[in-house]
Length: 73
Picture (cartoon, rainbow, N blue to C red):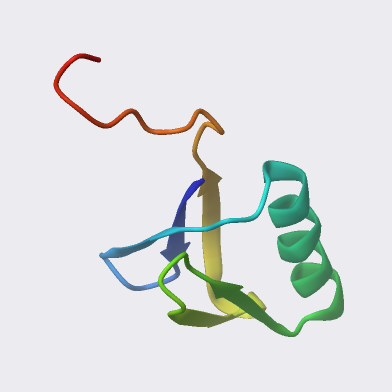
């Protein structure tokens, strides 16, 4: 699933591909916001993204439709 994170006072977005479902991502983001801690996410390549919850502008979750690959699609 594609996740786009907007950080306050930063013009560029952070975009990652996560193996988590939409529900798992919502719970992770909500837990970080409620606790006032750091949002920690891992992408499919093993890269870790850490964003302080107080700096989050928005988190946009993409559709859970698997990407199609190939010419006959």
